[in-house]
Image (cartoon, rainbow, N blue to C red; front, side, top):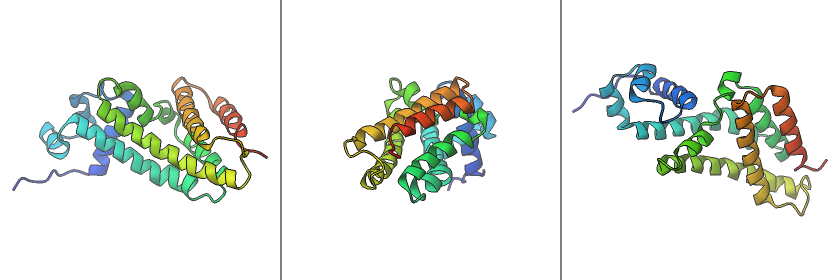
Length: 196
């Protein structure tokens, strides 16, 4: 019976996540991954099978982190839907370290980099974005039912708009925009949706 790999799985996935997030999929070579994960080649392939499988696992790991540390305490648990969406943007863009924000969003990065060369991995990242969009849609629908969004507003379109706002803000972060710029964009974006 083969021996199971002996390492802290969460720790090595965190290390792989950091590299993929900062360097991208293609530039994160196996040698770089082995170095940051502190694994030998045999352990990496035994545990994950391939670089693509490792990246897919890292996408799951990233989503689990976001569900625990971002979505659950904003879009899921905040009672008022408008406050929930506002809390999401505040937590997503004003709490992380600046260096982390500068990497953009792993999901959007993967879609941009891999849509042509590795559509399966890009598709997995796209599914995660769609899951986030569904959270937005659910809370926007609640806000509309409460009269906080105009009755003529298209909730599907607004959910897409919030995803586009997240993508645009992540791109601003990558280009070095400071907190004041992010605040102005978020305030303008949300004020265009919610009624007073």
